[in-house]
Length: 255
Image 1 (cartoon, rainbow, N blue to C red):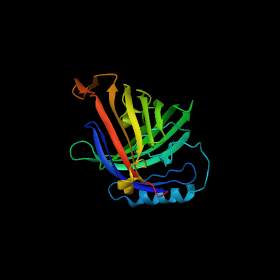
Image 2: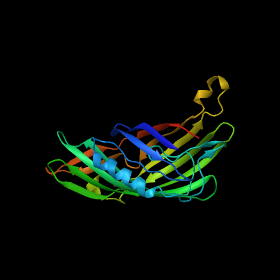
Image 3: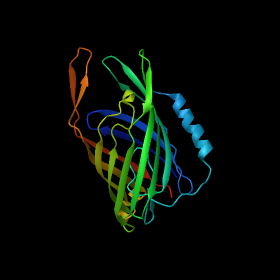
Image 4: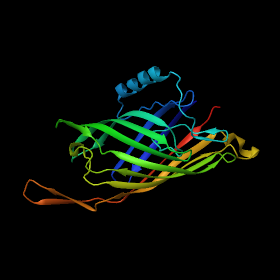
């Protein structure tokens, strides 16, 4: 199966970017993702090379199945199911920095998730970032460690539906301040879902191959304000707002 879709990720008012994803699935689990940002052909080439290397069948526990519907793993949208999984993701994007500056951000993320029961799972994730400001050099370092738990509380084979609730904790002071890792933690409860349209009536049967997955949830910082000494001997105070994360994918099955 090949899934090609566009995804826009909005995390509060802090970031907004759009990427294109190519997700390949073979056997029980295989996902390669590369993003398009600023026309960077090199990143796309790396993604294709990685895909050619990793298109070797291997086994992982079957997951993401509701009746006849298989929900593939997607990196952009958190999966609505629990799974045994190890993933590595390389990402590149451009984003605004200080006034008049552009930051080229590269990151390598690693995540490991493990099912404790068929409905409950735990996961840990870490990422290494390199931030290059045009005309002002580069900084690099690890982001904050993230831990999360997820409970898949509803699965309907008849209606091709999966629902889950999870909580993640981006643990403060576990990453490098040079790349923007915060000294406080962020707690993020979230609702995730997957819905296949295979149960639709014959009158609109042409929609049956489609499915949608999504996630929505708030992000609560454990500190409302951050104080930072400035060059003038004073203190700059920055608000740490509560933000909202939401994203979704639209899928079309060829099976």
